[in-house]
Image 1: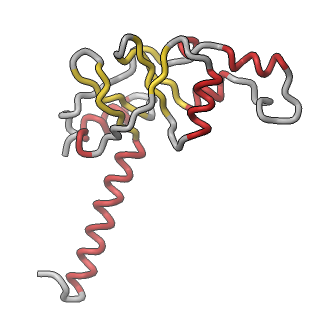
Image 2 (image 1 turned 30 degrees about the vertical axis):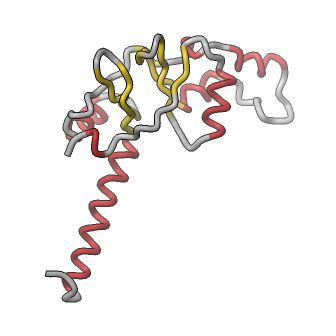
Length: 151
């Protein structure tokens, strides 16, 4: 099995000079946890929802926020992004991705081709979902077999 089989192809990107207000709106508006940072169409970094929430005031969205709290949303993506992220090729074995997740404190790995042109993204959740489907399919197959419904 290769990364291309299970990676997410719907990738959301931001640019290095985008404001954290934009990043927050993207995370608030979609069930995503990572944004890939691009410059001239090439991958230069990653921002996770955890990176964002460490960088902005915890008072944002509460009744007690101040102008100073809101100013944290004016910072640029390049101030909080992880630079030079680990990457994989879409033809890499999933076992290689699992090894990277095990060896490094990352929750996603961008999938790139031709000098950091983005093809997709692989998260540990993608891997778990894939193996969960395999386990479910095996369970169903075993149940059908024991019921005499498969050959």
